[in-house]
Image (cartoon, rainbow, N blue to C red; front, side, top):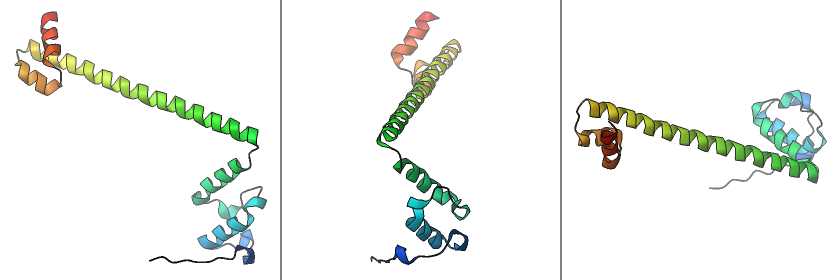
Length: 133
């Protein structure tokens, strides 16, 4: 079931002081966005934040837009690198902790099969630890 609502934005004539409902605010924005230099007080709601951010990017010159996109790409690259490094660090820390636990379990005389099950280390890794002790 599909329903259409047609709106004639050109006939909307309320000022920003007269906006009461959310639909009034959206109509006002659709009609006046190209003329707005400052964000009116009636449109300070969070729902309009992304709209005004996108509108400010849409006004960039080609040079500004290219610089903005390069800046976003650099930010995303750095963020992805940091996220990957954090995850690799966590994994390395888990492995090191499992080795420490396996060493303590070996020192306590526990069975290798139990150590494998508890630490997720391979039999070869645990045997190397027994040689080192």
